[in-house]
Image (cartoon, rainbow, N blue to C red; front, side, top):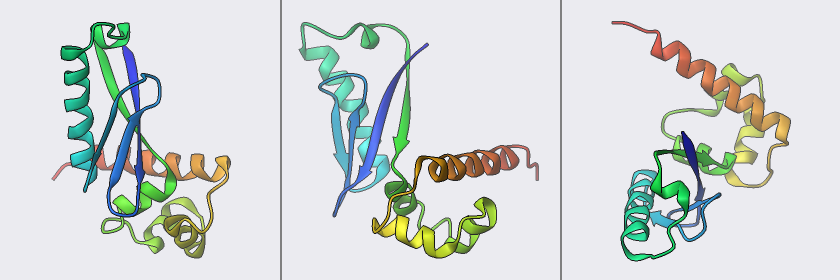
Length: 130
């Protein structure tokens, strides 16, 4: 199945979203949920009102959402503390604060380390039964 990769970025007052691999698909919202809905609406409008629709939109596709580190940390600020992130990644809390504020950007290796730790946590949570 083909993938449409949507980048979600935090701006000063909202979240912006755009397709990385399909031109002309943009969205925004005050929340990530609103930005995702805006993207879904944009795709439907694009398919409805354009004559030259990219082939990826005509077949079955899945939407993959990608965050930059600052946007991810901003979005999940109420869920993950810097201490919790340090615990699951081994990356210093102060470093996370720098990433969250945009003072510093993580190197690719650090980004992958954060991503892997979050995926591992997700897998562990999926295995939980109550």
